[in-house]
Image (cartoon, rainbow over all chains, first blue to last red):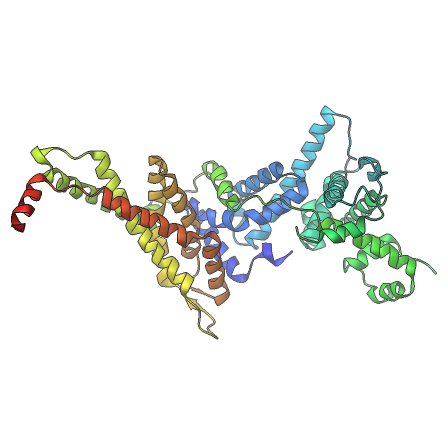
Length: 215
Length: 262
């Protein structure tokens, strides 16, 4: 996992003191941890859920769950890593729930976790758009958003944690409650699906590069 | 020539293959696979370009506001809780305010013509203005010491035990004043105290000795929030209010002063 969420050795010491004080009854000491990790969790949650409302909900719920389980944490690992995993787990639950709700209200538009593979290209609106039409970076971002939305929750989690967050396969496997080989396959499948979804826009590469890498 | 599979190429890019040399050698020679690799890279470039909207500088504060009422109290045993140093400090601070209010009330009562009782609201405001002004002054000192200090070259650990203890003492007062300001609807004071609190918590929760990089991290947090400036502004505002809420001299005192002039 990237250093930003793991925190330096000093932050780990400071986190441990904050956890200890919170457990001793000083509820406000927990604020140090909320202050320190909110933004990291938000970035993860936004990339996993694809919208700000759900992302904010995930961050709040992750901190609430971490507070309730704080005794179990008891300094076994880095607080940042721990709360990050709680957020990732909750985000998966939320995406799954959202999919179920959407399926109830409309025709299913996403493949089920273990169900039949659905071609993501078919799920991206207007796949015949010409490269010219995709010249705008906003349009490419929208196409990518649709392709990400078409992934299963496990695939989306895998690609977000692997690519954006730089997590080790073992860490992703722990969140997905899977083994490392299956997790590697999930990452491959996610990349392959995204690639396939964007394939009709053969020029997207240039546009993507022109957009830069700021996120 | 056998081409690489998509999975092999993704594994190579991800550093997950044991056959790096073989794949690299193949990529050097095979234009088809290089082209494939370019397309995979393009997916990652497009992913990198996906923006994450900024939730705002006060995001952590909003999260705290949302969750703090829902956090159940984690109670320590009663004797530990009672004798906790920070609790004793808070009790001391409250006692000091009550005493100050009492003496201020007496003073105002004496100087009022005809034994009129001073307006309780004004006395309360004056107490708050004086107490919070003093609190902000001391907080400013701690923040300034952090902001202006520079760990000496080669210094492995910086001892901040003195600042840490002061921050710890200020923390309880800060909570008390913040709640009072919120109750009184003084939004500027409440928000400044609210922003000051995590910084004080951060210092109070640090170990006695920290490394220069940790010291620098706290300095950055102070600078990023612009808290020093905000504390100064509110402190200045309180000084002015202190002047405005000072009890007016009694007419007899004014007359005496006039007599003394002549």
